[in-house]
Length: 458
Ligand SMILES: Nc1nc2c(ncn2[C@@H]2O[C@H](COP(=O)(O)OP(=O)(O)OP(=O)(O)O)[C@@H](O)[C@H]2O)c(=O)[nH]1
Ligand SMILES: [Mg+2]
Image: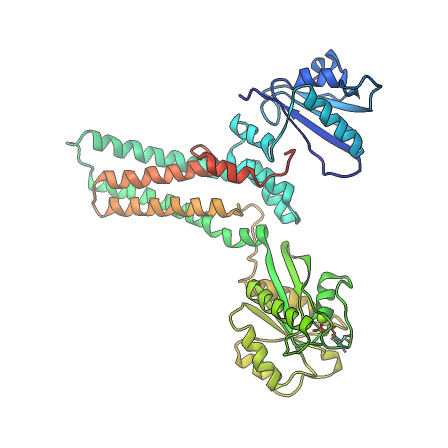
């Protein structure tokens, strides 16, 4: 248990209807009584909103605001400590005064994620759940929020618990043969244990493989539109983001700088980037823009190569296809409302190994196909069973992969007839690794890294 009491504003900075100031620690109730004048009423009615006057004890003046305070008694609170949440009117002056009053009365400012860190260290939640709290706050799509919510409910840890129990049972069996050297492990027992470890390794690796989809949902994709000037990149960009975000004119070289916007395709967050048209130019500004286009192509998960079906030709197509050769790409032939693409273009694109999509940014034709092709370019979004658990976090992925590998080699050691100690070493490593995942054996540095990515007040 911690000795100090922390405080932070839990709502975003700025003006709003209501702001919430949150306090946690052994002194929370005393400090609230000093600043809020709630008297015994707070203590008498935990978990109920009590009308309070917020005053600054440093100034002998009337209360600065009237708010609502709720006490959550330890250990049945978010952090496991006494927590007081105070709702005041959302004026920065009132919020600031409230905060200063609580600090003057003995609280200290919380560091990012410190409430959740306390919840973790006080055993209210495990590390995967703490990470889920951060992910929920950071969620930008419904998919992200839903998956984080499932993790917050402990789904990942619940899935791992029976598996760890099974591993412990194998350890007990192996340890006892090591203790009593005369009892050499029977060959059939060896193969049963080896099969048990193999099946545990497979279970972990099945979880690991969900990261391909989980990562898409969590991190999304960077998608860059590239092509010759005037091909209609900005027009397509505007269509995809459903707003006139980028400037469109008939003058080639209109877009100079990168323009980016966030969209969502089937639950996958996409950072879409419009770029300056690729061409040789003496104009310095445009040349810098073209340089940025090339960097954006190199950084993108998927490049949408935009071809002008009317103006591009075999000569301009070759260099364009070359520029995007190393990227996963979608090739679209635009302006099909003006007529069929110039002779040979479609064939030339096919010869480069891509099936082009015929579109019109003007009419919107083919736009749905482009949306689908973006996901297909990264292997598609397999239909995710609503009840299947996805690994969405790189840390979890790496630890699960390591645990699975350790179990595989332990299983092989057993079936190859090596000494039990070798298998035991692999088993202990796997358990240790799974413990790191849920936070039971985690080291301080890792905790520091994880919690520094939180918002203040969470
Ligand atoms: N008919 C027709 N015109 C289009 C289509 N897409 C774009 N245009 C026109 O083509 C011109 C150039 O469009 P932009 O979207 O600005 O092209 P861009 O590729 O962004 O051009 P830069 O920024 O100069 O590289 C504009 O006049 C658009 O109205 C289309 O599908 N059909
Ligand atoms: Mg443009």
